[in-house]
Image 1: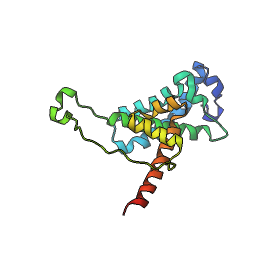
Image 2: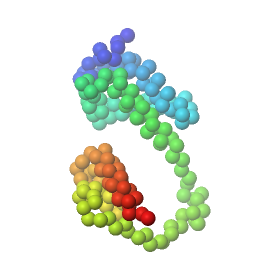
Image 3: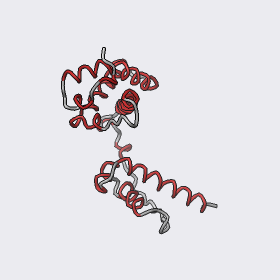
Image 4: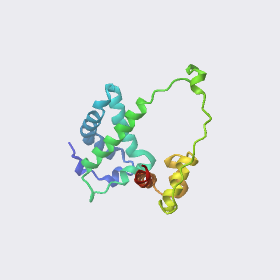
Amino acid sequence: MTELNQIDLRVLATGNKRAWDTFVVASTPLINAVVRRTLSTYRLSEEDVMDAAQDVYVRLCANDFRLLKTYDPARAGLSTWLAVVARSSAVDHARRRRQGTTPIDDVPEVALAVEDRHVEKLKIPAGLLTERQTLILKYLYDEERDVAEVAQLLKIDAQTVRSTHHKALLRLREHFKEESP
């Protein structure tokens, strides 16, 4: 049996079926274990666990193996990196499974009514936030855009949007905490 560290990822990323089959056989025990452990707190069925494990492989080969090509052996061993990918994929799978929906026709009209209330806009002192932080807050809150849209608009990574948003909120909390009586 081939070990993970013996697999040539460059060949794997070309879509070579033999390399992919070898990779799946070598990585399945690790991926299944990580997914099972991650999903144990979510109380999902065995079928969901297997679906989540399958999602890991789909994620690895999606978009011409884009994620797989990001692996950097200088930063982590392949099994460590795969465990991180598997855990992330399993959490995403669980979140999708938890989002129960109710058909709109089954929701009482009263529950659908949106209150028309005036919300006073927060006055942020000039210079408190950076220009980027201000712009990201404007897109996220005033224009109600999601993180992916903001990232695309600003031509930056989605994680940068989340990080900048977080730092802006920390600054605002600290400022308004000092101001409160």
